[in-house]
Image (tube, rainbow, N blue to C red; front, side, top):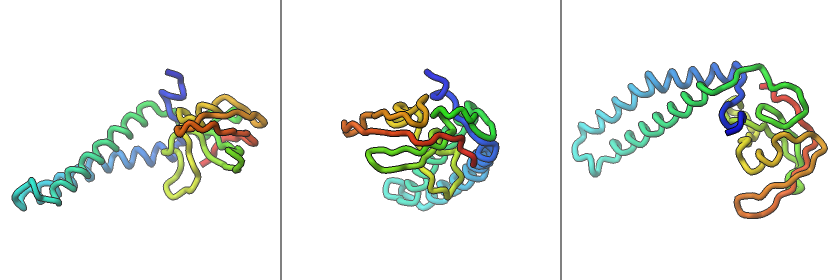
Length: 163
């Protein structure tokens, strides 16, 4: 496993935001859903109790998010920005022409982007991420999309993402 697969770069702001979300989900989020499940259980027949099943589904989502955040925060590297090396890697803002269309995006975890941002994030382990990781501006490469199509990528700019 490479370093980019085992760690995630996060700004201090993103780290703090995710820690607060984890704290909320682990305390009041869990308490609230347990209360909803108990209230729905009191309604009777659980086989046909839509409120009960919806609450159990929500509980599963909360627990999955708690596991995700716990693992992410445990392995995160915190800094105010990726080093300005000019090399594509996690935490970098990349401008590239992909299949003829110019696109600007961040390579890394979607968690580094502030909520409400319309900036696209690609994982370093995605087909695009793997194809451009370690490359520099001026490089042209390609990757195979999940549908089997070969897609050309020309990197035009690489800079640290500054949240």
